[in-house]
Each structure stands twice: as C-alpha cells, then as structure tokens.
Length: 253
Image 1 (cartoon, helix red, strand yellow):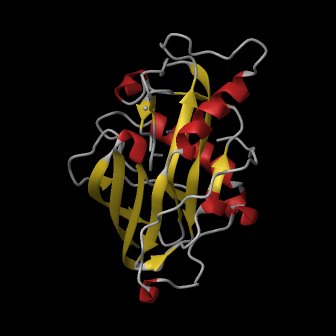
Image 2: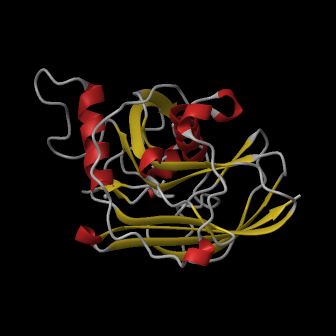
C-alpha cells in the first residue's frame, strides 16, 4: 500500500494505529534510528510494572510479526463504514471480536476517542505507528528495480516511512511504556485478500490475493483486570505535518 496511508501516504497509506493493515510469521532485524522527543510523563506516572508482552514471549503462541500480519488482515477485511481507520470524526464503539486477541486501530490522522468492550482473558494488540506497503500500486515507477526482490522493495518502502516517525508514546491508566524501541517489528512478505471497497483506505487494493509487508511499533498488552481502563497512544510525522492521538476507553468484562 503506498499512499499516505497514514494506516496507522501519491504517498502511501499509513496505519497507525496507524497501524497499515496482514498473519504469517517472520521478523526482520534491522538498525533503527533512535527516536527522540518522546512526550514527557511525570515520574509518578511511570511504573516498572510490565503491562505489555515482550517480543521474546510470543504471546498466545505466536510471534509479534504474526500478530502484525493478523492485524493487517483484520483491518483489510473490515468494511469502510465499520473500519476504524476510515472513521476519524466520531466516537464509535469498536465491534466485539472473538479469539484470544482484540485488535485496536489508530486513525489516518487527528485526535479521536473510542470505546471498546473486551474480555478479561483477551490480549490487546495495536500499532502505535506503522506502515503497510502493498503491491501492485497505480503509481508510475512503483515497482522493484532490476534485480531487486519484491520483499526488499516493499520492506524499504515501509521502513523509510516508519523511520520518519517521532513522538510516539503509550500510556495505560497513567502507566507509561517507557521504551518503545524494542517493539519495532518488520513482517516477512505475506499475502492477503482485501475487500474491494477498501480503496477508501488504500489505493493499492486489488480485491484479489496480493503481497504486502508491514513495519512499525506494535504493542500486545497483557489481559486487563475487569473494569474500566484508559489507553492512549500518540505518534507523528513532523515532515508531513501528520499527528495522531488516540484515546480508548476500555470496558473489560
């Protein structure tokens, strides 16, 4: 997907959670730039309690890269009138989701507040900042260079976008995840089928099986205790004037 898909910009669509939007395994290791200028949080808000699974834990039996692909497939199978990435101006309840993990999403830009009802035994997965590069796309010259693999081409596109991100933060009930750098994950090349109508989000959607690759900062929260919780995550792309600020009011049952 290439378009400011700020999914999760002709630019590519970024998903933020941005999160761009597919479930296989595979994770590319790379050298990532150090992010700076994170939002400041008072010391009373910072706790060492672990609220998210580490990448090494493989939550619910799958690696973070697999959950990243699953998130993309979930988003690309959600109709435009229900897709959180397409709904950016009103507070809407996220539909119930079955399975061990509940997927949250960001916006294509701007500030929004949402609510969701989640089971006390479900993990919560979302991209803080991500980009999904899909292929083919209707843009002149959008193709691998001679001798370049499709995987390398898409990976470079996705990583170039995420590299520009800054000011990313995640806060749950005033508890801050203080270091998000370890949560950067790049998927392997994978294939997905998107609903044809999702051209509303991504000009590269074909409605048929097509390849993609996603990169970004992803979080899998551990199951929450019953009751109400407040989750906020933010990200920005200063070079293009893009800012996302998402607040979720979570009802855990």
